[in-house]
Amino acid sequence: MTSDTTTGATPRQRDRRGSRPIPPEATATASRAFAWLLIVTGALGILASFVITIDKIQLVQDPHFTPSCNLSPVVSCSDVMRSAQASVFGFPNPLLGLAAYPVVVTTGFALLSGARFRRWFWLGLNAGTSFGAGFCMWLMSQALYDIGALCLWCCLAWAATIAMFWYTTAHNLMHGVIRAPRAVVAGVLEFHWAVPLTWCLGIVMLIATRWWDYWVSLL
Image (cartoon, rainbow, N blue to C red):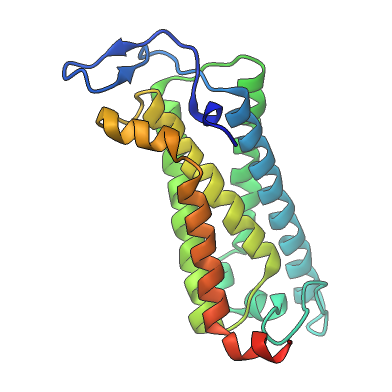
């Protein structure tokens, strides 16, 4: 993905320190690449949440049901679904995804159609994706070090949420929604790909080291 992901064409003003451009208070535009990223990552999140929800319902109806993503002792969605962490707020976690990811997809399509949102909307979207990314990382730690099993659909949701969080943050930095020094903004623009890539590679490394003996036994 090129730096076009986080750039737009709104006339911008300078803050008092002259550190970076600040867009008009009323609106902030977004590139088509960023809009499509929201659509794709949101759609992947919906897919993952939908499949997990259906499997969870079937597992409740039939305790002997085996989800299609039960591939091994390590990759075992049913173990994750049966855990207490799978219903942190008293209902299945994927219901949060079914409620939140459509908002991201709708935002992406609205941007493609030329919509422009106020600063409070972008801050709200950033807050929501921040919560989502943090929640996914907590669930990841629970899966690795408490539950002792992985759910591939959960992994898909983690990756999608990380991407939407980071690029929403990058968009807000580039358009002055989140104030930061010019050097920070320039670094984000030039190396926007580095954070999500490093983040996801870090997760892969944690998964590899957590079950290293098992992975080696498959060779």
